Length: 67
Length: 573
Image 1: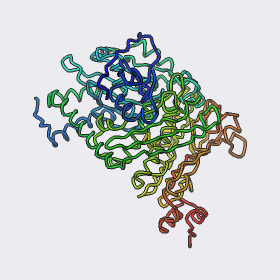
Image 2: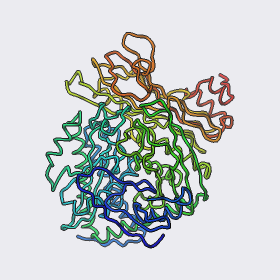
Image 3: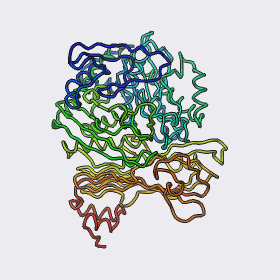
Image 4: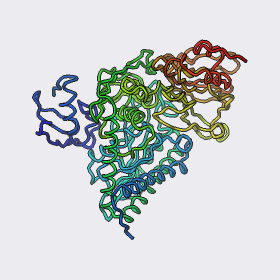
């Protein structure tokens, strides 16, 4: 992993009904997201494990994500 | 009085059994106290205990399709609202498919468990509520194009607040379900189950002290993870791919495709659905948790079929699932998803097992029927004058494996539910069962043949009923494996009163799909004939022992003609 990741709190108003999905695994991003800096920029995923999944598998299999 | 429990092998076993038995007792409460047949006969629910962080520590998993949802859903609710959201005596309900539920009828309830004012755990359950409103009685709108047609959607909200009914919410829910009496009874069965889970959990922490239970539950989860990783490490590393085609989505007659790559690397697995078709217009889309459930299900079938590994959050950690948002395996708002859970999920399980058959052929199986074969109906019961509605499913054949023939008439493996007995069915609903049995020749031929699907003939005994269906496998049969033959396809036909001959629903009613349609009106004397798909065969049928073929013919499972055609066998009596 990059070692530079951090949790980002999502401050959505209580009446917001839309949800956000992780661009790597597709999981719901609920309440907070995991951001990390990769060579292609700052990426936002659902949790630290997904950063690891992205770096160790996803990027090689499907190419880099862009924000 | 607090007892000492050493957290050694024996102590962890004792603790695990205590936690699992709490979940089992919670399930019994739901079964014994619910109103609807889908709970008390079908057992379409699961019960769980989770730690204060939402990590699963024990489950009674009647319905495997929920195992991908429950470990995530409570945690997401915690993340979305924070632990402060929960107060003693609360019960939170939630059926939002975009926030962690399998489809709209599945309702999750969770109750925080407090000890001396401190949140220590959650009791949870998830069950298929038989009627949640929407455009079709039974809430299976098989031609829905949006979630809004599927029923009432609840984000996480408090049904019980501090031990008191949230009456405003109850009034909204009951006003939007067609059978509010059933909802009232089933919701209370779920709440009663949570109350029992809470009471037993508090007894447990008083018996052994909280720290012991918390540390022990974490140790059991770590043990499960080690066991699961050890099982996965036994599989040969590699990337195993497979594809499937589904015949239609209920709205159009176009097929759609799912692709998967199962990546085994060391002691972990990645299940990658990238390349799968975009979400479809009809309700055959899966939610993310359903795709995850299918992955867990298939991997457990291959790595731990005897269910020896304690089921908790630990055994799920080595499995990662990639399900692209906006695809048929991860529907986005406002896409419908009611049939994705029941009729795409079983095929996803088969798809993964097919992919894994390249790695461990001796541990895999040919496809099972792969359709829950859902019938939905409702109306005013002529004997009671009250509105009724029912969701009914039937068993299909399972696929042959390397070691044995498939099972006959088994409810699809994602749901594991039970059949509703005819006596219960006829007592509650105005449909008479004229015939019901195993469908001869529906099991795909093979060295180990597929199990048989079922058939049933029903007659309407009310002046009219509103009838819907969400079947599949009428056009595309369950595929055989390693030279085994495909399983039998399904059939769903109607004969109008006074007419002779059964015909397809698209011919009679002009609906788009012959197996997925909503709200046709059947009259008294109309008859239904349906046959569920059979399981597919495993390996070349010419390798089947001749004594077994003879027995199949004598028992009536296969015809003489099929025995000669598929197995090269002529019965000599």
